Length: 166
Ligand code: HEC
Image (tube, rainbow, N blue to C red):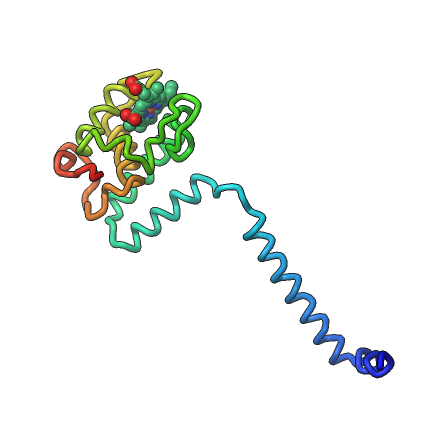
């Protein structure tokens, strides 16, 4: 029996087929390894980029997408040190401010803007120009799912009507 098997194995066609099958198995194993072993969260930038793409696909305007994207940069540079890279809570303030009910009390985008403008960053309140505060407020609102259906960038003229919906 073994002899019969060994003879066809020598044929180039069989060897080629075996090589193909083996590399396919290796590829599948590597893919499985990548998905099951990868326990670390994707980079915040990757998550934000994915969200921006989703909103773009849902028809969000370029102007609002740009404001949210700028806000993500502000958040990363100015807020993440205390609030965590994705607002999940951090060394400076443990309570999450993204994916949370903690901000429900602000009720509207305008009141969240006022809080951010006058109280944040905690170590240097009032240091950010209004445009920057609008950007980071839009980012927080969007990540919490409160900008769905908004078209223009968040600002003084519309933020009172943009509800923070529990
Ligand atoms: C030095 C640390 C620090 C930085 C930097 C900082 N925060 Fe805060 N943040 C805090 C602390 C502490 C509180 C709680 C303040 C309180 O309860 O009075 C807070 C509270 C908040 C809240 C209200 C949370 C709640 O549960 O009521 C929001 C919204 C917020 N920060 C947004 C921001 C934004 C936006 C930035 C960046 C522009 C920022 N923070 C930067 C420390 C920080």
